[in-house]
Image (cartoon, rainbow, N blue to C red; front, side):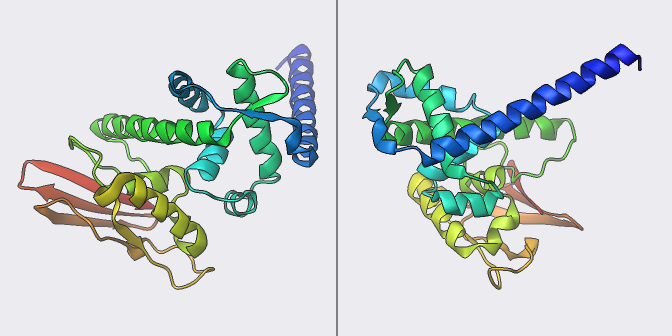
Length: 251
């Protein structure tokens, strides 16, 4: 590599580090700021869909923060503990203000919790539909994914399991409090297609793939094969020899 290229790389690294430091400082300020300084605005129904689409265009961290708060009802402290994240409160405020600005609100206004709650529920379902399509496409190429996959169904049967692996992975089995909140939301949202059970021996137990036990399966579902690997367990089911789905669990 030429000397000029080295200088460009060093300059880019410095800019990146400076931007990160500025961002971290910014979220600290936002965390300590008076939340009453803003007025909350309810968006009209026609704008909720637009907001849900913008949520899915956020960086992954922003999506996780919003879903954790509005879909799974996790507190900032619980979010920090589970995702090993610092200052979840300040980061949430940053993304909330970013979304508020993108929706045309003034600097003294933020989107209300009610509007964000509705938009996040729509965004979550869109997120799942996208993941289902991507999983089906990847499976057709023979590549593996560390998600729970349900294929060739007219409805998103047992989509709850997909939700868990998308955001949390099987590490969730070790935290009973967070697990209960996630399961409560899933069952409420997806009803009978989300009845399942995750078990662990304690808060600090190492995740055990064998601990996942589905308590709901579609009528006629028959276990055809079980594939065990060091970091993954796969259950292959068939329904009347015409439809099939796999449950893939990974650490």
